[in-house]
Image (cartoon, rainbow, N blue to C red; front, side, top):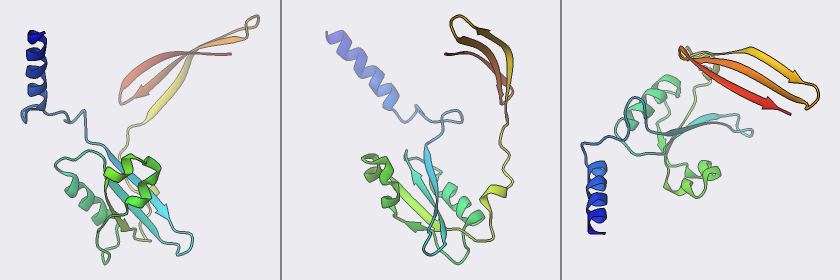
Length: 152
């Protein structure tokens, strides 16, 4: 029993130490982003919420604000009420928001996103049972993921 307690303490100390990073390039921090349109005033705003605290968040929000925000409007803190959909987590969210520049169109922004290609490789339908078996190749970031799906 004492050995198990000691082993658990050592493992906890290792993972809680500053030398162990739970987040890296393949495990980034989580950030919530939502675009809001006010029907009454026809204003649009972008809300960015920090779901995991960590370094670099302030610079991240500043870069988004400088690219899409109105230059005369400052970055505002607060606005936690906009995240009520995530209750009870919403009470712990740190949120910033800013009004969007009407001339900037977020949908036409030049963002280099990886493409996803899907191709049906095999398709078989069994008339008696009514089952369909398909083999689908999904290519994402130059990696082929093969999955088999059955439908009734």
